[in-house]
Amino acid sequence: MARGSRLARLAALGLLGVLTLTGCEMPNNEFWRFGWPEGITEQSQDMRELWTGSVIAALIVGIMVWGLILYSVVRHRKRGDELPKQTAYNLPLEIVYTILPFLIIAGLFFFTVVVQNRVQERSENPDETIAVNAFKWNWQFVYPETEGPDGEPVNTVGSSTEIPILVLPTDRSIRFEVASADVIHSFWVPEFLFKLDVIPGNENGRDNVFEVTVNEEGAYVGRCAELCGTYHAYMNFEVRAVSGDDYDDYLEARESGMSTYEALDEIGQPGLASTTTPFEYLQNTAQTSNGG
Ligand SMILES: [Cu+2]
Image (tube, rainbow, N blue to C red; front, side):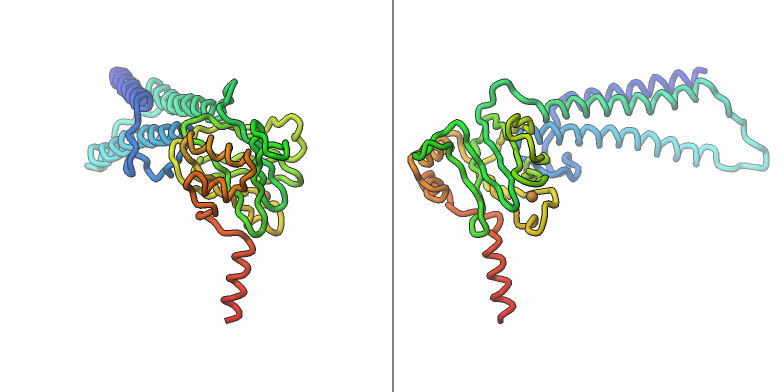
């Protein structure tokens, strides 16, 4: 009985340690990421902290289990032919090792739900809203709050010769409303550590929605992550994350009638995608290298 309660106390202490660890700020470096990829959004930081906390919790449990195994192997190794004291049907012990795993799972579940809710949170009033339209086999990005010279919202659309560039501001909440013109696609920016299926048939409701806040400027590849037909593999785009001021200037340039290329040039950004190449370019290089 005494041993059972001591074990329970130890377990409670361990769990408390895990809770404290996951509750405070997680260090972010190669070691503490434990293989987790580095994201560029606020949301991906929450996911990384969940991962780091979970690995630490798993390691604490692992070290305790390895320790008990090692202790038992050494302490209770065979000394003679006499049968050791049998401890089957030790009720307190059985209760402890039934409740303990349950508490661990409950803890992991709790933190997972908290982070999941934060990742999927939709604010009342996002700073920016962008409509993403997927079609076989490319993307169109519409900025609904803008107005181009033709009276229509500014948009960028990809083709087999041009990678569409999705210009985004950093440090502002961005809502993506994704819709498909034909089959199911999937909007995926690997550096967001997030993807959302693009389901056709909800153009009016635009209820297929997620939000991110990008923290790092730069160029990041985006892909379709749902096998959608022959040229699925070439359904790439590029996210160009720029400062808020540059973003405003970019949209202003677009509203004045400039193309995506010209407007990017205007804010000192390369006009063409650097993270991926258009389909036709790939085809041409393939032909050239085949021909000789
Ligand atoms: Cu697709």
